[in-house]
Image (tube, rainbow, N blue to C red; front, side, top):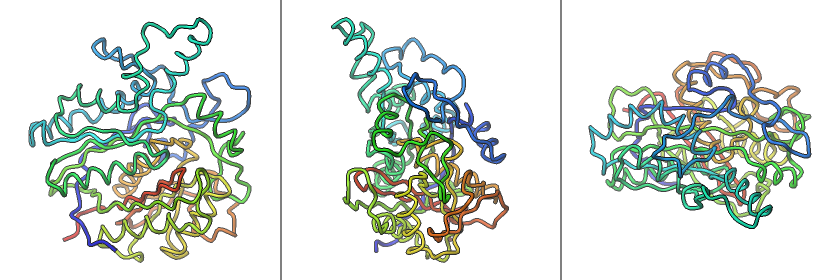
Length: 395
């Protein structure tokens, strides 16, 4: 196992999802146990529920109109809440000492779908379609850096559902290398037909609200949203810290998890090793918890193997749906919130529990003494990541 690394402070955060258009709305819904799953805003030839950001999305400023996609609009909504903190970091450290690391799975595919439809009908792409600034996954990182005036490293990671967890590892590595002092990290994904058709083609898209870790779980709901954090090297009065990030690749199958949960277990163990923490110190796991038969089985085995049967476990997919490239960052921000409130949110849909899984799923909100939370995100192809988040920096 690797030696512990220096923790980094989580000094600001932002959320947009199916349960709210702002951080305050999202966290209030989480605390109230209120789901954001509902009928899809897209025309589809099948039945499912999704976690769509409610209401109309604000248009981008005229200067950024070439970047206009549903993804960019959601991303800029979230950035508006954290922008003040980022600009203060720029003043403190300098524009060249700040990095931007964003994860996404869909990128601007909603705009590409519209453009393709026009091409199929007319033989020409729409005149306002810009493939480099709309379809290209790096466009959002470029937009953030341009808007904020950031001059440090900027890149977007797309490793399916682990994307926005893995960018936290990227930021920590950059800080340890002395290349940056702060980072804007997170993930954004938006709904599109390709994703919904794809998961239905795999036979794992649920027609009803998802039920992670429940005996009668029937598959996932897709969601959209954004989750952002500002990480800083030095903030002595901060109450939440990224202590470590564990990554692994089990390379078992293109779309199915390794059945024993080996890669998931390794990610959790490596996160704890970086954090300098023991398995017995983990108070809560915010699981990937997609509500598919295979994921919940493999992840449960990994949790039991790494942490035992007593550690409390929840999934938040029943609130937001599976946000794919934004899932890991959303779980991490939820973890910060629970640490600050000393309260575990309910795992919606977990009843009746599946006794074969053997994990201690929290199905009702409960007060708890929390000092260390793990947030899991696992992806197609066996890409796994786990974030270890602590209430205060270890002495």
